[in-house]
Image (tube, rainbow over all chains, first blue to last red; front, side):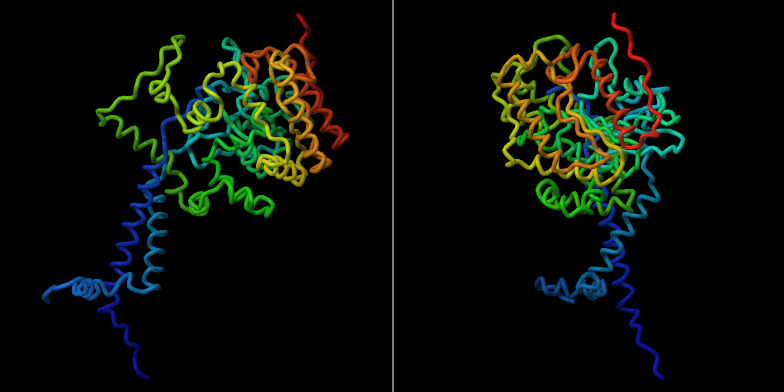
Length: 47
Length: 412
């Protein structure tokens, strides 16, 4: 029985790049959502 | 390797990054990391908690068994829930500014004044959970009612302001409720046409994400904290508010005081600008579309249907308007038109636990005092009427209900 070829030399950099891109995207998405919510308290000023 | 063209760059990146993001599975793994990242941010940087007692209205409700559950108009969480106390009779009271008493010396709230006349039901102290939404429109009431029903209160009371109830030019104001109300509304296919008309894809996506990702759900709290930090650094200052009692600003100065696009719409587009302020409410009332052509009909119908299906005792009533405005036959006729139309929709959605008081409070009580067409200075006659209606409705649903209001105040 032959051992499966894991080919880690190619896969590890790929997985690391995917993780890095994913985490950076997550941070940017959260930051964009936070930045686009108006947080000045709303006080009704009449019709 | 010598780089001569874009292909060479792509090959170089592929070699160094193991062809990341080059295949569908790789993109899927990256997206999973995005979700994991958003989740971890919420864990590592928890948002400051919302203190309900600090909400705009709640400082007036200290030491009372009443709370306003509605969060800021920009907060996509919409509302905050209190843990239900089984030893209290919980009334969820939903409405706009019309559930306030706007007496400058003694401001108050209709639900709180009802609670004062009706401190106990079935031997339990009454707890008021208010959903008070200033400038609320029909779809906002629907969203809040859907949420209130989910919390399983003992009674739901819904205030319907006739000025906006069937006005097709102003259907929704609190769009921040969209993500929060989506889980409650989407389960009924009858609501899908409304969701497709009034929701954007981002409302749906953010609602789904908010379910488990605190960093997305609590973004208003993060934004508030961030703004407080940034405000210390910015050289920009807010324009000073107009002097109280001074002349009403016009043009750009007036626009600078507007907090939302709806103000602009109402002032410059929805109503003619030459209408003096006291006439603006009657003008809006007369815009009501009662021929079955507007989306409002579907909202009201779905709302009453949902209240009836819940089997939770519910009262929907049309708030009072200033009787002096009804001396104009056109305004009076418009109010009759609205009442009759609501009556017809209520008949189509009749349920044993639901009472729709389709006539405006103005038709039922005398002695009301108003600041303008919609806002009461003295709510006592309306409070008396509502207190007695609540008790008679609860007794009709269950004759063993113990609901005895305190005696009315003696007339001066």
